[in-house]
Image 1: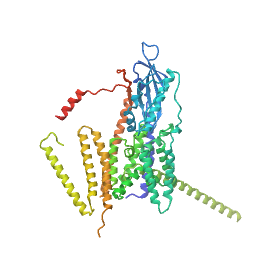
Image 2 (image 1 turned 90 degrees about the vertical axis):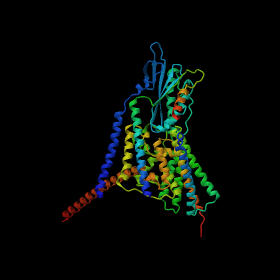
Image 3 (image 1 turned 135 degrees about the vertical axis):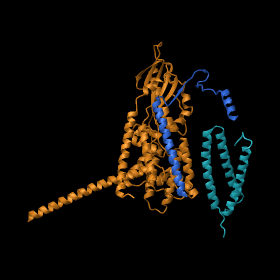
Image 4 (image 1 turned 45 degrees about the horizontal axis):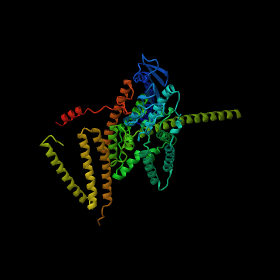
Length: 408
Length: 102
Length: 72
């Protein structure tokens, strides 16, 4: 219907508009953020009437008829999945923990809810901060638990220094968050590249081996596959201040780098755990490939991903904005809507090959975007090179003409 | 299903019983037409799968009826999906074990 | 047939995803405007014997009357 040139032009416009919208979302988000921390802390006083700040991580509550402070409120932060988790702990003047409050969190709400609904917080109440706090973990939400416990310990320590005069906090390096899974991610990505490049007759078997291992390791075992929230974390720079889990970010970065370098996406064909699940189900149900080719089906996922990333930037909470069924599939955790989506995707995979990949998976828009811009950049470079070559050729021709005239 | 009604309740269960009979005879007929070569242990497996399936639906809707909305849907979703996958697997095995007629 | 199935899957998934994202936006908006902490838990020392805070005990009479009304 439209010429290729015209389509290309609109794609360039769309690409620029997308980047502008992301920047606009970031900017609007920064306007929206207000420093309401002291208001929040004021609500956490129990017996005190007046709140005064001693230093950024410590407040004290005083009462009219008491000379010394009746309670202290310590603030602490821990590094969670999507960024920093802030906690406030109200401690009596004798050192007993009276109240614990989560002020903010950048973790996916389902994981946070899981931790908060366990009795982790209840066990801390009434404990005295003179001794080290022993806090249990919550299985299936390790990163969120660690963020909360680190934050609580830091908050308690601020008060401990004030009340008892000593500190018990060990300084943890963000580097300690790197695990063997991160090395595994790099190793398996390298293997995926090699398998995709090879022309060995058993290529298909090797590919299946990597797919199945990835499904087990990055899927069921650790649920560390990346999603649109990882993309949001990457572009928002939330990883600057440290992350609780780097595996998904490493995988995403490797994928993006490889697409930029070689214009190929090996993740979808050889590594994606959810893709692997769909492939297994397709084999079981003899599913056949089919696709929908229409302007709407091509552009809706792109708009969806752009909206999700913009919302993540605006609310400064990319971990809250993801719409993939992975969390339910591998971690048994997520909202009821995504649960229904997971069931749908699994059942449809028995009949249609890779339905999620063919419809709403954000990998397709991301890959298309990177590929398109790579192509555009290359064409600009090529045009400039061609211009330079023409200029050089003209210059040499001029020089040749002049030398001819001189010799005459 | 309709514990308060003396008319709808028995009617509902009669209809459900009739549907089950249709399912059993239909399955038998379908197995014969597809020449699956069913025997006692194959029917046992299929029977076990069917029993699990109807128990899951019964359990899930019982939970829904007991005002445990989330629990009901989650049982239907998790166990139901696993059973659908199991059913597909059983079908594949039955087709693979089809006796080859000359 | 498969194409129709994929089409239906597409439409239903798209609707579910939109509803999910709208719910998230609503939740985060409320959180921001509410200016309250995400979660607060307080120690109650009414019961001096246990060190764990008291949870609200179930009002059995209220529950029983509600149940009776439901099953009438």
